[in-house]
Image 1 (cartoon, helix red, strand yellow):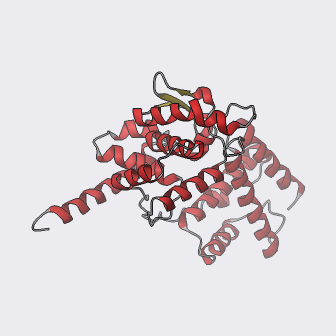
Image 2 (cartoon, helix red, strand yellow):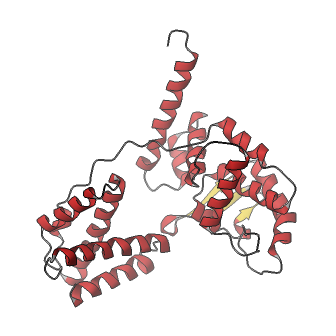
Image 3 (tube, one colour):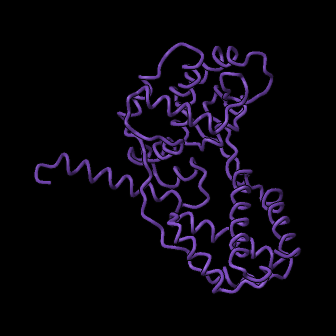
Length: 299
């Protein structure tokens, strides 16, 4: 890779981090995608990298398919490179035609996984308790289910972001977009109990304002949340492989199943476009189909 392309890659990462306010995780994803592409150029002996033509770009995508990556992953990598070369074209005059001409692979129809209402009740019942850890875990589960926020948004919450008088939480979402999400009395009660007794006991002299903490009193991480949820699912004897986004999917699905309108769910989830929310209509239609097939005498 020549010096101009290397500089373009460095400035691009600074641009998406500082000017576009992308999260550290997203910036790291872009960095890895670029690094992987530049390694491909080197391994294939393709020029200096500045004059990438459509055949070279298409060959790279072919290599991705050969690795049997998911279509969504391939599509993301194409988007990363398209964004980078657009930036490099604007700032450095590097040709970006090759990736502008590439088609994204057709999306796989993959319905989001979610918990049924009975499974959520089982989760809450199995994990109820009076120890500081149980109180914390219940508050965490209640808030995720009550608001549908992303795990990264949950771990970024400060104590002052949760208003227990108005039962509303201030969330900083993707692209530094702020939104306010209401929550019900179950979450409010669990959160109040956690803040009154469990959090002070767990903090162990640590001084910071993060809402959720691990058992050492330091801020809880995304990985820590995943571990907590896995433990809770095991305790409830639910034979499900959980990932934190399942609670976000569950939140959206249950709202739509119970009559919420699409626009309200979009706003609560913090989706920039309605198309991101519409995937849940497929889930609710499937739910209705199963209900019909199980209940109708001549189904």
